[in-house]
Image (cartoon, rainbow, N blue to C red; front, side):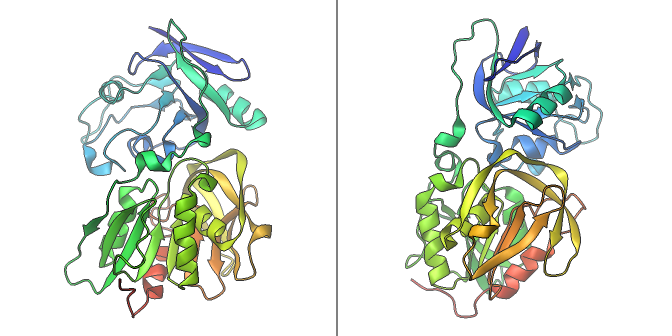
Amino acid sequence: MEAKLVLEDGAVFIGKSFGAEIETAGEVVFTTAMTGYPEAFTDPSYFGQILVMTYPLIGNYGVPDKTNFQSGKMQISGLAVTVNCENPSHYQNVKTLSSWLKENKVPAIEGIDTRALTQLLRSKGTMLGKIILDKNKIDFYDPNKENLVAKVSVSKPKIFRKNGSKKTVCLLDCGYKRAILENLLKRGLTVWLTPWDFDPFGKLSFDGMVISNGPGDPKVVKKTIAIVRKAIKNKTPVLGICFGSQILSLAAGADTYKLKFGHRSLNQPVKDLNSNKCFITSQNHGFAVNPKSLPSSFKEWFINLNDGTCEGVISSDGKMMGVQFHPEGCPGPTDTGWIFDEFVDNLKINRLRP
């Protein structure tokens, strides 16, 4: 069936439907990653977005079992590729990309020039768009005007116990990736996974706080910002990841802004301003922190070597850290895993008790 990707500026890309034969609307964004599409499609940070893959051949290694998924289902609103592979070859493959999309009721379009589309998005900036079939009965939809975090967060606290653990952390779920939880558990921590609007102070016992990644505009989740502001006041060790770094910065009194087309790839170079070392990072974000707005108690920690934007913040005492990239991602493959280790070192000996 013929499908069209229509952008808000009037541009139309005509191709063929290979996912669920329904229509969808959202924010059209692109990633330059050549691999890792099962992880990307299940990343809650992509909720509400139509994802464009710049690498021309997608689906060539099929879909593995759920071990590599970052959440329990597909999170993207739609998908655009140049070539969809219907004959994947990989020992872990259990199904084709097309069948997986249909199971999750996610529409997709193939046969379009995604690199030309990406050039358009780079020059004009991220745009709203929709994938339509023969009826075109849907309107454009801006996901950033809604509280997307509330749609992807858990509904009630859940604990993941590590045998022999002496330290416990609270993971504020703004749309967490499973790899974040796995990295915390691997380091011998017990983890309370809590909803985005759940204030753990006075209710749970924990030594530190992690703020997860998530979708949308960070300024929308005012309840999360208020909770983290309390953590700063209590001098609780904090680690913010991606969206979580923006939340930490907002709670500290800084400002955030929307990037022209965002950072979504597996090869973003960042520089640690403390050590002057460069790291290759995995990223997925459309907003950034304005470093000039940081209070005196915080400073810029990492910068992006492509465009100079802020990629991390840290408090003066080093106990509150935020990174705009994903240390649980494996682009290098584990270049920035040490950030979790530093967070563990920062955890308080005297636990916060209710």
